Image 1 (cartoon, rainbow, N blue to C red):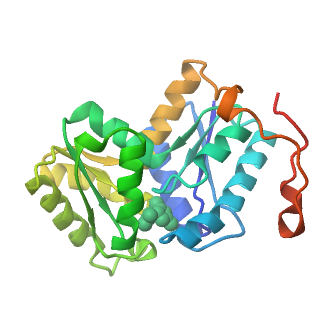
Image 2 (image 1 turned 45 degrees about the horizontal axis):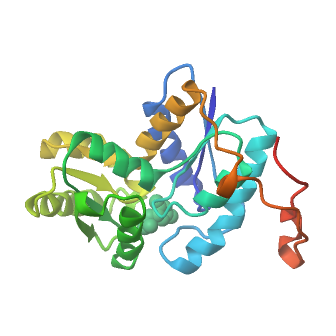
Length: 247
Ligand code: 5HY
């Protein structure tokens, strides 16, 4: 099978590390390709950047459909464009936040989230509630570290993330969800150091995507996830006009 992991921002270095995390979670027989759009923000840390990342994400989903991809991962913790991607894709589309919350709920009664900038905690809390994990989520904490700083070996990121994980456990959590695709490479070391589950959404989403394909489950073509109706798009978005229903 072929799982395509889409980093919706345009930072190639982050896409590379996301691909490494995804392949580590996938079966050896699964082909995992990690891509990012050629248009859009270098990182996603605001509603404005999230909104402007979605066209590039959807373009990558359309390209994946041409390539016969079996399932997709939206590798950004805000799960941007997830519902729209599900209208385009035949196979399953998994957001890393949704996947991480589910994975945490399978191994712990209560979990917390450690994310990047404080301004992103509102979206994280909103997704916790949207996906039905409000009662299970004891805290959402921010490291106040920029997404692209996570990739900088000279930064204090790893220490700060570990400190915030400890604070989440002190608040009563039994597991921690890492709130950024760029934290994926910290997951296993932190889990060992802290002696409790630390969940990375990239790996969780990749594993869930594989399982759904194995279960022969595809995104429904009914109701809200049916293909969008034909419609003209003007201006820069003219190429996003769709030919019609997906088969
Ligand atoms: C992410 N931004 O996973 C989110 C994290 C965040 O560019 N990739 C990004 O801070 O919301």
